[in-house]
Image (cartoon, rainbow, N blue to C red):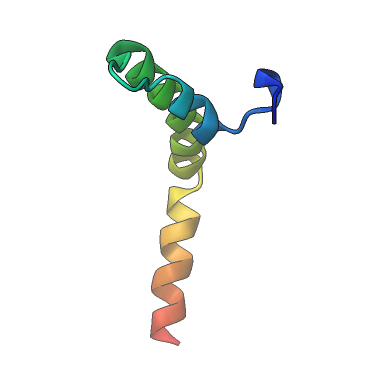
Length: 59
């Protein structure tokens, strides 16, 4: 993968970490941006996810 536009999130994060320095502010900001969609989906469907887990254990 030589094209930075086709990098996965993990590879793109790894490119922010150098051998001698780490761009902490950019790295943490990128991680927050990556996590936000997953967190929003979980919060939107939290009730159904937890209900299905509880119901499956009671049957």
